[in-house]
Length: 335
Image 1: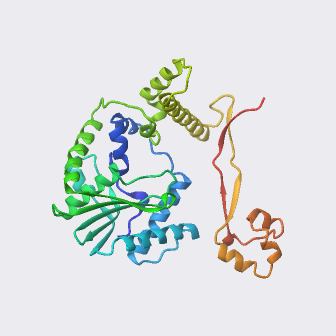
Image 2: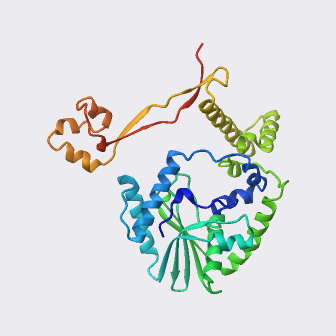
């Protein structure tokens, strides 16, 4: 199935939002007041890797991605083949939006990979970020497994395997459960969806709940919690105090992110502050192509980095290099 990952149908509580809804019911409706910010370079890279892996699993050619992206995608595909020896069918980008919407209209999602066969139902999610994600009792995977079990009419005795493939965490990690747990989760998920979509759903800020919430800069609950923590006098650092400090940092970062966006759309609107352009970065698109290009100029190539080579070879072909810029930073205007 060839699906554009950037244009998936929007579900109010898609699989990746279930954990947040579980931790802070009120965050779901509050976020609807704010537009999605533009995807970060890391998110765009992750989307591209998913598309490469999907093409590989479907046996299609693709011209997306650099060598590192292709390496990650190949590792993911190899891991799937190794860990699904009894699979009779692999379903790539399997949508469970319709069946989950029958449970509650706010629910939805699409699974990176479903493998069925040998009395097993395997759900696998590819994670390309550096923040470690574990499969045990993972709300997103449980939701996907429930949707897959419903859509595929899985038998009661099926073995349910929930897997995360994440290079930053050593590759493949999985947790085994059963249909009994999925039935329990069905009730939990329904309760989460119902309460999270109520007009006055409670806001319960925490580091985990607020980290990726796009409404955190305007959330009254996190602001009040931060202010309360700041009023407390302490003689000794406690674990609780560090948790509250972490939450305060998340809120402060969200304010800065909001300031950057405001200065991008309305320069000069924050007196005394401006955006400092990020430094430019250049990297090789392909190490192999670069080595081939410099086969007769080994002295230049021994300098290795693009910027160092450019000091010797001023005119490098565009197809050899990637040019990017680090994100702009918030800075005070110097008087």
